[in-house]
Image (cartoon, rainbow, N blue to C red; front, side, top):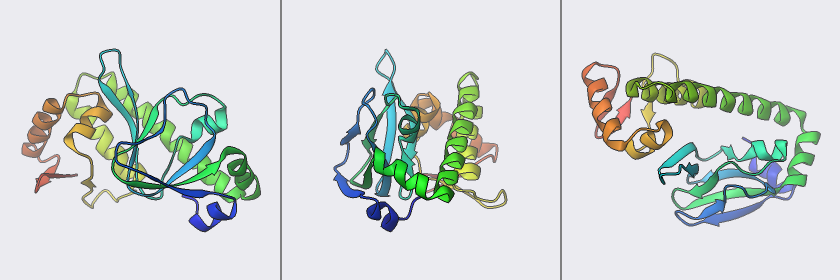
Length: 198
């Protein structure tokens, strides 16, 4: 999202996180801007029954946890590295200075936040549906068209595990596996070498 050299110019440091390391906890106060250099980070929370709900997965070049920086509220979820991950970390005040002095980047964040609101609205309507297939299609189509901006006529390789699809859609992994097989038979997706394409 933001060029690494510009982040460093404003005082960002590079931090390494081991697999499954907590970057911040739910309800922590936001004090930093985070942007992934390599690896992946998930933002998650748990319901009363202890089931994990993944709110988003962020890979190289993507930032996470910004809404609380802008809104001055506590994090609504925890951030955890999925694998060994390297991240730019920039203090909140320095991040605000960067945005004030670079209005084009500030506009990009408005677009990113608008896309995330769209994702939340799309997934919320899917979660209210009992149709598992609809939930999975909404997730995959959101990633294809709004995150990775892949044209309709090109196949998108879903880089999520079945478990991650379940955690993102509120479905059990067994349901995801069953529904993906059904969708493959209906030619809604392709499965090659255990990878899902749409």
